[in-house]
Amino acid sequence: MLPKDPMLLFSVVNTRLRDEYASLDELCTAEDVDQQTLCNTLQEIGMFYDPAQNQFK
Image (cartoon, rainbow, N blue to C red; front, side, top):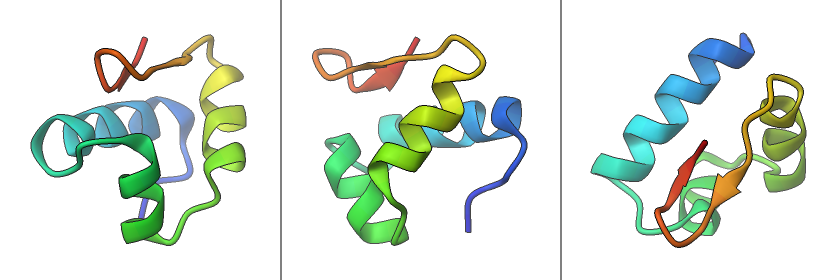
């Protein structure tokens, strides 16, 4: 389960993307998370997914 707090979510998602998942699609499928909701939550704190680096920045 992913945290609800956007700053914690940012940290956890980037760590999992780095260590466990090759893409955001893979993470969302494995974690059963709606990708658009995840992106919207992180956009609220100014973070956007960079597929080339497989991380939110």
